[in-house]
Length: 79
Image (cartoon, rainbow, N blue to C red; front, top):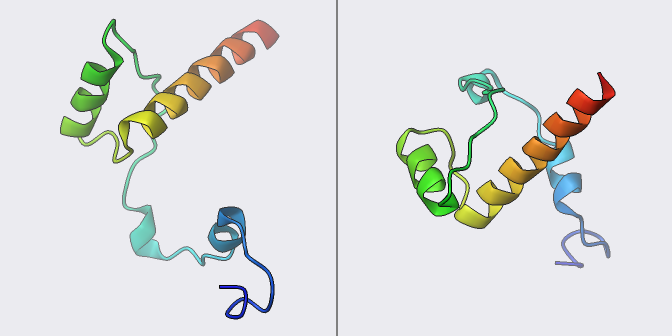
């Protein structure tokens, strides 16, 4: 890897920051609604996957939803 990248191992941000967006990449929609987590987060994740609301694995989805809830609370507190 280091030889291929001239002695440096790039981060994920390095790779993603250099992707040139193409029109076909923007066919989805941005969902700004907060996901409500019920008493069973795994059931909420399964429902989100079944409804094509996420492609993330359970742990990544749970982290994303948690961060969104914290950001929402911070925005409400700042308003």
